[in-house]
Image (cartoon, rainbow, N blue to C red; front, top):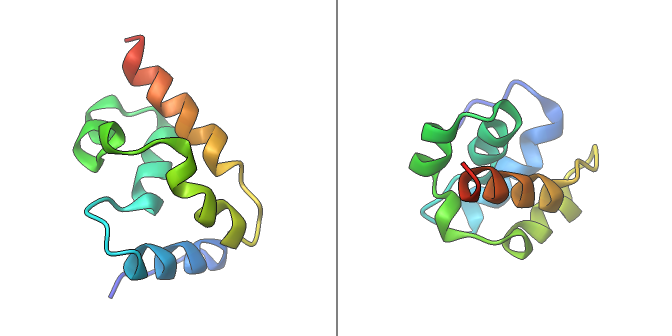
Length: 80
């Protein structure tokens, strides 16, 4: 079980555990926010598009722009 310190990310963690993906959306979004390119590659930025995390954006209580963040992460990797 993943320990969650932020109440806002609890639903995202629950959703990521139920999606049966090889990627972890919560940690991927944190890596995008921090712009750590090595971590983005390790967490699977090449395997997703922004529509894959649309449900995460819907479930997020604080309404972070998840799809926009994923797009920025993809562009960061693409143009670097």
